[in-house]
Image (cartoon, rainbow, N blue to C red; front, side, top):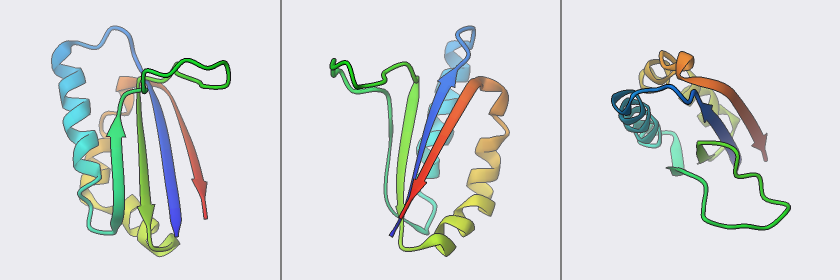
Length: 97
């Protein structure tokens, strides 16, 4: 199992249309065939001191192995999503097996 977690901090001056485009392309990511399980959304409404809710959107994907993750990285849907890199101020990625 290979888990890929990504957190985005969107620019505050994005238009509503740009946010909708980010959401649509983000949700499309979890349709990439090598993903076994995938979730994309906004921070949960939880409030404990150890929780970081400063990000705007998060995504968690699960692959069978690193090869599935590698195929995801070069997939056309992922490449199209990366065209939006100017929409965020920061991205953090955590991968684990």
